[in-house]
Length: 335
Image (cartoon, rainbow, N blue to C red; front, side):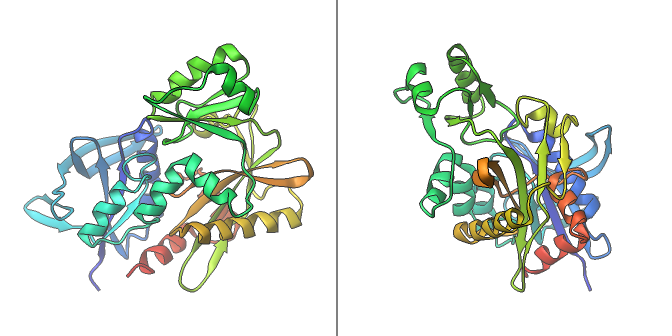
C-alpha cells in the first residue's frame, strides 16, 4: 500500500515559532514511519518551506535543506519529484494554525487535518470569547475584562477595581508563554498591558485564582472517547511561564495528586467541553482547583505542545498507551 504523505505544519507568525518547531520534531519522532512519509513544513509570514533535511540538537532545529512549498496545491518539488501532501498535522502555537486561518486554507485544498475546524479554532484562540461562551453552560471561569487596540481603554484603577490584585494580564489572541505578566501592584498594570499588546491586538486582564493547577488531555474518534490521566503543575515561579514550560522550572506530576472523584469530574468536564465546542483530534484543557476542589476553567489548547516532555505525551504514557498508536488513530479516522 502506498504510504500517505503527512505534513507536520509548524512555525507560524507568533513568538512561539521556535517552540512550534520543537513540537514538530516531537511529532515526527512519534509518527509511524512504516505507514507514513513525513515532512515538516515551516510556515513563516512570507514563505512556506518543506524541510528536506534537518537535525534537532540541544533543543533547537538545525535546517540543512529546505524547498519552497507551492501553496496552490500544498506540494513541493525536490530532486525533480513533486510531493503532494495527503494530510496535515498542525502544531503551530498561534496564528495562522491555532486561530483557524490555516484550517480554512486546508479545507479549500480538500486536505484533512488533525485539529478542530476554522470556526472552533477561531473561538478557542480567543480566550475571552471562548471562556464566556462556556460560562453560559455553567462552567466556572475567572472574572476578566477585554482590552482592544485602538478602543477607549479602561484606566488602571478601573481594571484593578474589576479584577483585583494580583491579576494576570496577557494576550487574548496568543499563547501564554510570551507577554503574560502576574501583576501585583497598580504601577505594574500599564507596563504589563504594553507587553501583552506586543503579542496581539487584544489583551485580557484576569483575576488571580489561588489553587492547584492541573491540565487534562483528551481525544475522540468515531469509536471512542479517551480522557488521559491528569497532570498537576507545580512551579516555584510566579506562574507557569516560559521558563517553567520549557526550561524545566516546574514539577509535572502525572497522575495529579487529587481525589479520585475530582479526577473523574475533571475528565468528564474535559470531554463535555470537547463536545460543546466541537473539537477534533487531541486537546488539552487547563484548570485551577480552588477551595473545596472547585473546578475553574483557565483555557483550552487545540494544538497542544508535543515535544517528548510535553504534557500530552506524558499523559499518554501514564495511560499505558503508545503515542504512535494514538496519532495513527486520529490520522486514519479522517480518511
